[in-house]
Amino acid sequence: MVKARFSESQQPVKIIENGDMVTVFICLNGVEKTDENAFEESSTSYIEYDYNEFVEEKSLLDMDDLNSNPENYLNYIVNPELDKLKNEKIVESKTLLAEYLSFHPLFSKAKYKEGRYYTVTEEKQRQLTSKMAMYNIYSQQSLSYSLLKWNDVGNICEDWTVEELTKLAMEIDAYVTPLVEKQQAYEKMVQKVSNIEEFNMIGNLVFE
View 1: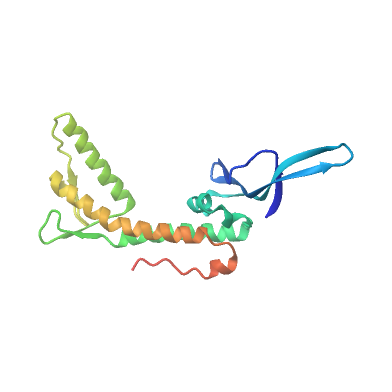
View 2: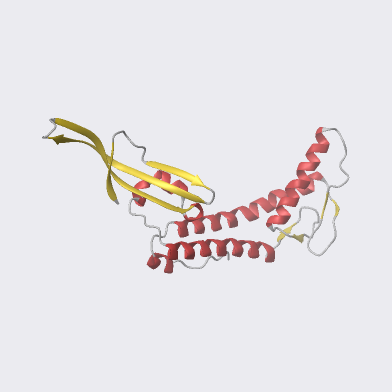
């Protein structure tokens, strides 16, 4: 943190985005001051701020926290080594989530009373969302949709009713959302780390 002078009032946080990078300017605790010039018999008024500026990868910053608590970033220093470790840890957490979803299908009785397992990967979730959206498009045109099909693990697609598929979609959402939130919370924790010592204290992300 340094002291910086401005002729006009400054906003506490200013963020300029450029692709994956952000330039951050922080101005806090402004104090109005005046410098007297005895030789020219004049004075200069300004506002002095606690100031910091830095360029960082957006993915490594908790943007909500930055905007809400800029005082925590007055002494923020870009550390290339730490940034690399944080980025790797965040990527790793997303990979762990994807792997967990891939190897832990959802058991559902949405169609069969005895229940079956259904894949809940991100790709499969997108396909289900697309399928339901297409059904709605046909319905809005008062047309029947003969391709409302889905499959359980290890089997081919078969006809589903919209009620069955809606129930499955709701169950998948209830199953996946807490896992995604856990990964997001872990990512935010990594983003807030400010030194190697804090980074080394972070445990591994576990979903079970």
